[in-house]
Amino acid sequence: PQTRRMVFVKCALLQHQFAFVIEDKYGESSVKQCFFMCFYFLHNDEQIGVMEKIEAHEKALLHRAFSVFILNDKGELMLQQRALHKYHSPGLWTNTCCSHQREGESNISAGKRRLQEEMGFVTELAEAVSFIYKAAFDNGLTEHEYDHVMLGTYNGEPNINPDEVASWKWMDVQAVKDDIAKNPDLYTAWFKIIFEKFYEHIKVDT
Image 1: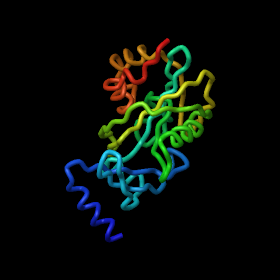
Image 2: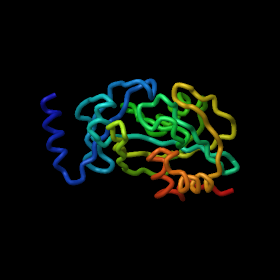
Image 3: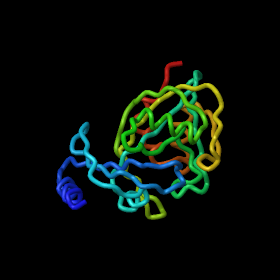
Image 4: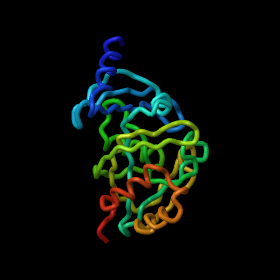
């Protein structure tokens, strides 16, 4: 433990330091223990300690996350409305699902797991882009994430988990972009950033 704390102090002084929290959880509404990691280089990380997800959000520590975007053959995006009891961003519309990777879990495996947990289905996924964002919320918590965006295709209806999701809908990608511009307060922070900076990555040829 002492060595881990010393490594973190040293790591925090690096100009290009990144820290990851990988959540070990069984539901978004549950607070479970997370693995805290220091990301020395863009593709070489090392685990140095543990902390709870809520602590990472309280301290605004950069942590690893993913966002899944599911589109159908019409080029429509499956949106979900976050459950009203979520501790941040409740009731806001966002991408198909999102969460944090567990220890040793690949982005794709994490995305498929969370699709099943939140939306009740699984489909093949492909990694599209990743980015870092930081967003403070009214409740004093901060999301500071290295977000991995993944895409998949599905044409059926989800079987939503009401503990995680209040509602869902298909929406044309361009219509989503237009509505974000008109009604930004209806959408989550990370979702708006993805549409602003990485729109071309989630468009499909129809």
